[in-house]
Length: 76
Image (tube, rainbow, N blue to C red):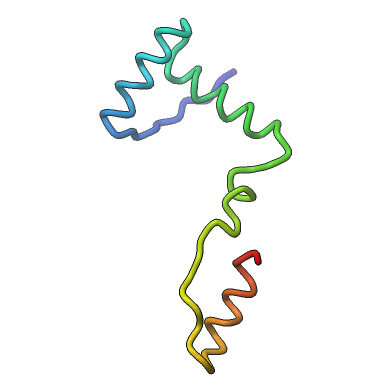
């Protein structure tokens, strides 16, 4: 049994999704389900891929808080 979920999309994204679904002979829900299934099966999650992708300006000298946050959240 499937569960109903409401997803809010930008109208342009929704239009492109409908066109893609039509080409693949699927529904927008089917496309989303396929995307999420494929993503959950892979070893790398979206969050893991994003970790370290941000960059910050250099910490001001003596700014221990920013230095600790950079050490914790940014990859070298």
